[in-house]
Amino acid sequence: MQEIPFCLRVEHLLHYSMSDSNKTDFTNPSTFILLGIPGLEAAHAWISIPFCTIYVIAVLGNFTILFIVKREPSLHGPMFYFLCMLAVTDLVLSTSTLPKMLSIFWFNSREIDFSACLTQMYFIHCFSVVGSGIFV
Image (cartoon, rainbow, N blue to C red; front, side, top):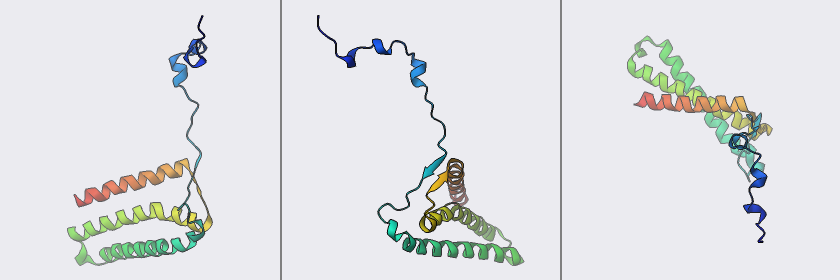
């Protein structure tokens, strides 16, 4: 009688049902590890300078637009409301990503909680759609 290789025998699987094999004990991960820019860990402080500069300019510029449009009654028209909507969208998009990126670069804070990651992804996707909708 010919011996059947172990990989072809199925009797060791008979006590499992299909529903048992589809179950996993996976739960939501508690944290994610972010790497920054792999291979350039020594230069993270230098890389963060342009990001921080652009973020500060974006925040100050958008707040300036919002402040001037709010203070000047002659700017209360549809075109300037459109500009304010774009400024708010830009503020939310940049504020949802850049602070965590800068904390990775400056403080080596590489962990992000699952809920924080989910919230960050929500704001990025939601306000990207809002920005596209404003242009449409």
